[in-house]
Length: 90
View (cartoon, rainbow, N blue to C red):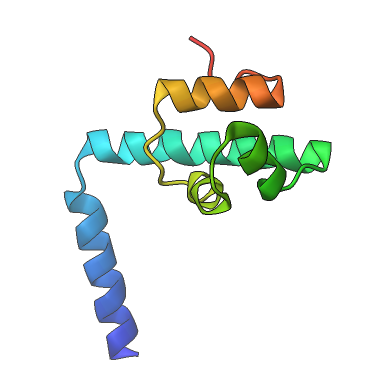
């Protein structure tokens, strides 16, 4: 019980000390990953198929869907074209 409390306290401290910019970046990455995952599920497309169509490895696609990947605009454009749907709008 004491260990749980200490763990939660440490977690809260880490979250509190995380810069707002990094929190925002992680939120963006997670949202994009969720959108890609949702599109794949809607279309019955596997991660393997997305990897083949984007000329990436399955491991890289798995990292994309992990929610912490720092996407480049080039990668987002490629995924958007393969999926036939914009992942971001400006």
